[in-house]
Length: 244
Image (cartoon, rainbow, N blue to C red; front, side, top):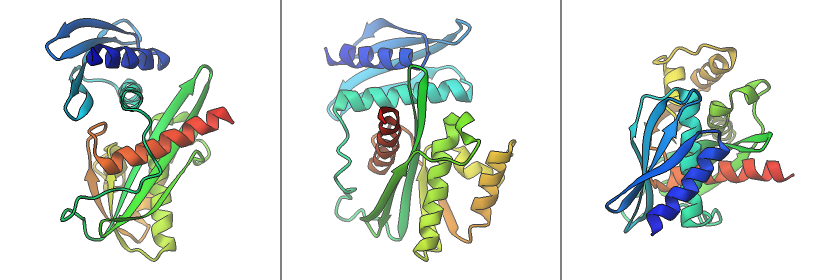
């Protein structure tokens, strides 16, 4: 039963991230995984499916979660889906169906946090397309001093800053940035108040970059190719750092 296999993979990924969980009732065409918080509170359930388009994990039964625990859960979901589908082939360029190419410069950004035992690493990744053709990609683990403590956002923020650096080096003044963590757009646009020196610095850098940015939020773990590629690049960089 593929759904149970996916649930077992997810369960192990959650435990590695210190999220207590357990497999509970099977449902038609699916398997549920229950979650607990650090104090034993019920956080709701994840549901694992395996449809015609492959594995899927839904989060609609989760309660209103604090940001750190939600990021740990998102990381476990991402890792479980990648393992269930097999390793993402990062050597292939982004493929856009004929007639659906987006005009202009579009950059997909994402971050990844990987923890193994007492060691952890933050990765960032980005992929650039112009008029439907991939023209650049980059990834790494370096983040600004002090940002290591904010592991849940450090990779995502660094990916945006690296994307803007690349735009300036290429003389690009207008870009669409596709992202899945809402703070990336809400801090520099003022919809969220940047509460610490690092997010304040990020917001200031973006606002004064001289680049006209159109922000497009995409849903994480939804199979969107650009988001999956950026996430895969970030995760590969973080995992490589732990092996060094």
